[in-house]
Image (cartoon, rainbow, N blue to C red; front, side):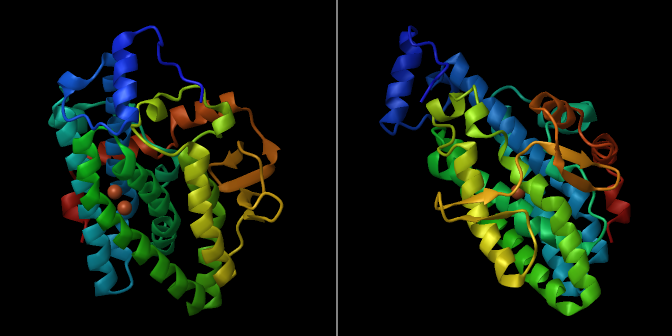
Length: 315
Ligand SMILES: [Fe+2]
Ligand SMILES: [Fe+2]
């Protein structure tokens, strides 16, 4: 695999060799500056993503259909904040100040993914997001738990991943329920999949063929590539949808023996109408600009979190 590590730097080479042999780093003194950057960057994004779930999921505490579901969603929100707390705590060892980072940072600077930048409009969107979106997150964090060469981060993810299985399970159960409840709820489930499926598929980033930076893999910060993780996600999501009859733009390809998307990303999303135009491809430059800008909901959602007005309105 191509790597951007400087091969002439003996310290980098030595570290890479030790990691390849299964060595786990326990603190900053064992790192090269480059390793540190890649690790901190990975944890920073992961922590911001945990926080960004809150504006999406917390309205479901109010609109959940029964007490059991209300408790489950409230717990999930608490879990997500706990996940962020674990990661911010680790970042403190690298000079981050959690309070400043969470409450005093410009909202636009939060590093979020498009999947989490559209507030859920009803409980059905929340459970569909848990079913396929939390599953995407779970595949990423499980890979980190299994492979990350920074021991404290890998170990901290055991609890995180244990809790994520409940989120995915909750999403799956309620998706099934609404699919079978009435024609109207079935239609809402389908609409939620129409919008969220491509967003969740994009969670894993650009195809491997486009990826120039392989530092995360070279340093074994994570173990699987973008395409490998996307394939794992499809392996779970496509059969689930096929079993129920939910239509999604993906299928199993007999020829390659792999699951594949029916469209070639990136494609145009009408953010206002929440409609994907699969026949209208955009360039990767345009896609990167869209991801960088964030949806119109991103900044207001984070500002609202930072102002801590949630307490009064949650219940
Ligand atoms: Fe989480
Ligand atoms: Fe979650």
